Image (cartoon, rainbow, N blue to C red; front, side, top):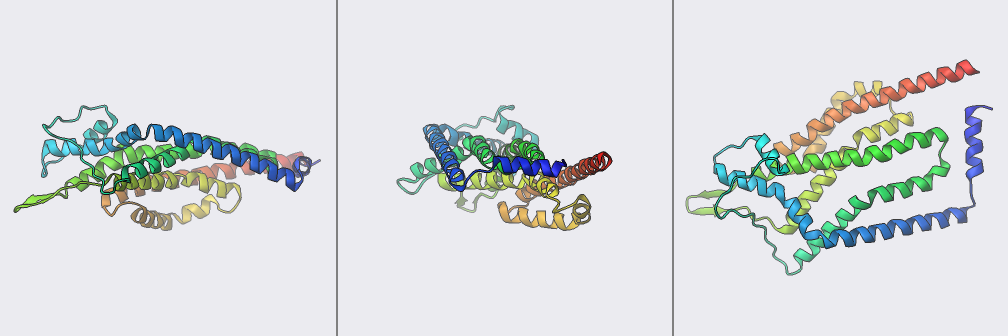
Length: 295
């Protein structure tokens, strides 16, 4: 019996009536909803510390900006280490990060949005596992083995993108924003972001970087499906770089610093994707040779 016949027999044995699939889907959806609600309640209970945590990059940028003055310069390494808490922030008398809100319930709605975003992040392993358990009976044995690593790689890459946003991107974006303030000629234009606008900026950057960092996962899955090859990816490198630059310009704030901070890692991840697809092709070639030799 060939491998294809064994896989088909395995799927036939695992098939269930439509009603059984719907019942299973309902049960897994209930688990996902309950997990999300519990995650939302947990994150809402800690929404204030979470928001203060998200404001720390702004606080680091403001501290260094006040210490060196509007025309001064700060070392990028100092800014990153200060945000990470590995370097003491400059102490300036009266220095405080000021955020405002202009609607009576803006703080409440901001906490709710933060809790919803945090709930998705916290419960993602549960949601992904329930999705995998639902589709696993319809996968071949080799597809099951190939699918599991992506359940690990996807959240790790998302966290890597989020870390780049928090420790590098946000401090430089806020530093750039603070440097645009005007205090001359009797005119004062001071940066006082709204709490909701700041959260929207943070979540937009986290989602943009986290999703863009899924590039190796997406390209590797396409390579597994035989839709794309490493040769095509290598030949289309120049077009991919142009697409990356355009994507970075669309999903990031309109400043060159943030655009470069997204474009450069994406280009590197594209190169990693080429090697991942190439390794898959090599393994597939060896497997086909072994099967042909066995026949």
